Image (cartoon, rainbow, N blue to C red; front, top):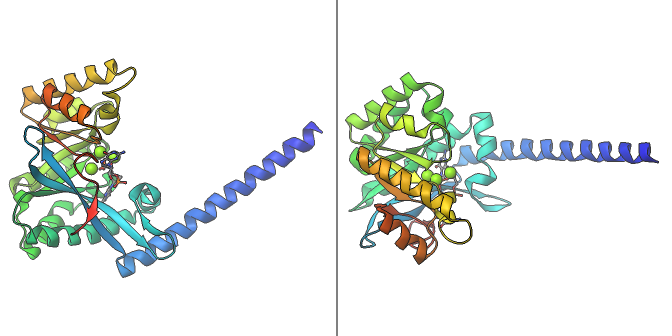
Length: 265
Ligand code: C2E
Ligand code: MG
Ligand code: MG
Ligand code: MG
């Protein structure tokens, strides 16, 4: 009996593996089609100055209008996009929408996300600057959000890319700061002007066992202050979190408290 049960279980496992593989293949095929018809749209979420709540810019967040499944957010497809390399094509479609939007805005900056693998492609900086120039958008009003993984693999090329962008005034920002191992060392090796404190720490600031998050956030803010790096708290959902971050010296904030990501008005 035990043997029979074991076999059943492994058959069930095979079945699940097969279903998952099929799901991923479907998603990849859908993604290829979506690229051909550009079924992507940026949603925008405000970033505010914590001292007075003034909106200083927006983060552009990728959305996919899937013909059967409706609106999809990156966690639902970014893995397949990255594994297949398709994310670079999606990103360029996305950035085109974003710079057009930027060229129509009177105030503030827009921040775009870049997948690590995509960021280290040869012509990334050139292509981005060309896109901005073609749209008549000011590079000084564009920010790029990268994670430390982008700096890990190919640091000479990453440095060249960041320098080329900085020369035209594009601000580089480290996203999800504090979740990796070596983010600290990147701050002085690369031209990074801003960091986003990961939402897990912001969430950890209130409620039970908040002491650890508090200590971490305090240390990050102290370091950023010393280095002259601007700080943005991410995932702020409550007034309590906002006030605490402001008290601790965090410059800017983003989160549902100020506004959810929304399509262009
Ligand atoms: P991220 O850059 O760290 O973006 C923040 C995520 O937190 C977004 O999820 C946003 O909708 C969500 N968020 C904002 N405020 C709150 C809050 O108060 N509470 C909670 N719980 N969540 C909040 P989203 O839009 O699903 O994006 C997920 C990730 O996908 C992004 O994380 C970014 O890494 C990636 N991504 C987004 N847009 C693009 C893109 O155009 N290209 C690439 N390559 N990646 C993108
Ligand atoms: Mg981001
Ligand atoms: Mg983040
Ligand atoms: Mg993230």
